[in-house]
Length: 423
Image 1 (cartoon, rainbow, N blue to C red):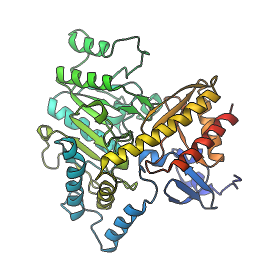
Image 2 (cartoon, one colour; image 1 turned 90 degrees about the horizontal axis):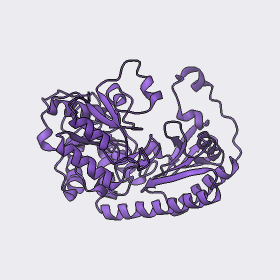
Image 3 (cartoon, helix red, strand yellow; image 1 turned 90 degrees about the vertical axis):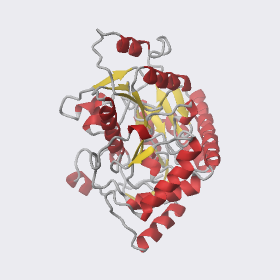
Image 4 (cartoon, helix red, strand yellow; image 1 turned 60 degrees about the vertical axis):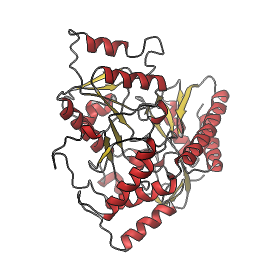
């Protein structure tokens, strides 16, 4: 694909140096539909990034777009703080009927603000309020957001350094397989909890991702998650599952923790909950934890009604029969796995490991700089993929759940070529 150099001068002179994704994809995008994005010169790109997991149902999904346009055309409420609206009522009822009740989850629903880190901050604040303790335990290579509370439970040194102040009241513990299976799960963690001389303050909660996305596609085993839930119960700590990137069907089931058969005390959800890429997040928690005073945690944009509209349409379209959606995602995931097996077999000396669940996969190379070169070459060939991991050493595959088998094959072929041509 021949790409003419676009005029990026206004971005380079006016926009902050903090911009990042646009540096890896130096073009000017104009429109998008399904699993394709198009730049202003008409070049098409197959999207294996899906808005960092915010577009599980593709760009401008026609069913969701119709619901949104209809709502706007009738002058439906756009901004409503936390006022009761018809759009919020429809979402809450649908979410209860199609997601919570079928899974026997008794959660109360909180709208903490529009982003994932808003949900995490509210979860941490609630856990501390309930338990009357400050400490939170997180895990190596975790990523929970960019505001101060979320950064305190995030592992990445580069992102933590951006805080500019000490990040306190968070203690990291080893994530699943951190020691390559040579150390018994939670041996260190539980020993510290029980030792009065350990210096570890009794934690209010533990926060965990079932699959670490930004941390390098690190997949926690079912047994590890079950043992963690049991440990939290034994030690009187709340279990928070951060399902911001891995929820809404990304791993197969609607919630990524379902496969482990656990019921977290608190769950954070964002990214694809609106279905359309509109800002929206939820903090879900067991009813007995709902000890908030009215207005004790708030935010101007915690009632994004257009997002409620598309979220409701998403649930009705894709989760009225959740088993069908889950089955399709697992089938697509198996297709990706077969593609990664082929790439690994072709590049045995270069590929360290492939890993994933559902439709989130990572391809790690021995050469830590290789993933970035692969992503760059893939862009030149018309495929949008990103890297993850503490040193950006993992190629991250995050296609829409609605991607077709043909589009998956096309993207995997481009990825295979990019790997081949960066050897």
